[in-house]
Image (cartoon, rainbow, N blue to C red; front, top):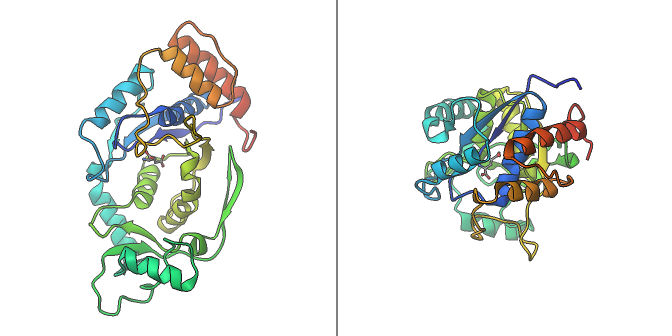
Length: 294
Ligand code: GLU
């Protein structure tokens, strides 16, 4: 089968705790997709939220991935090393008036939403034309009402009116920290990422990220958003819900469980490397060089 190179994929965990099975499934899908495309696979540690990051979680994540033979093909990037780069892009967006200062508190936004009949949390655009002398707290990206569409390899055609469904979104927080929506786009663009495979919890973030890509002149990668792993009650596994950490015990059992989650039959390999060899082959047959086959 012909390969679809050039391909650069990545796994970008936040070190807010150890990986759970849901995040390990994302790592697996992005890793196997990169290998099936004869591509490059990168790891980036998204440690831009010091209040939520947990000391040592980054190394714990890297060790677990390595135990499953998932290692970065290039030096690992830590977002805390990238603040100057974010600043440079932010200043440019600000100069171009694509980013503006916002003085609203969360309570004020909720009150305005209630008044205007908007869903709670949608930014109603209060400071779009200035803060009327109030100091800026956060900085927001100016959205537009043109629908943003993309074809997700797993979920198919997605369309969002970002202005209406999200509103102008934060790129620099009131506490001065960089927002995920900005950092993720800059980092993927600078690394030349062509393919993003991640969980469906981020599906509705993608149009926002596409607006940032367009604003900074970066190409839009291909996307595949995989189903979330849920617990026995149907809740998505999350660090907030204290989902159990994935471990390196019973690696083959874990790999088979994740593989089944991704919709494949049991492989029944007798080693981790044999499992991966077969998995890459099967993934290639199902997913390579096709945009939307499910
Ligand atoms: N750091 C994000 C997370 O752990 C993922 C970002 C991404 O894949 O775009 O949820």
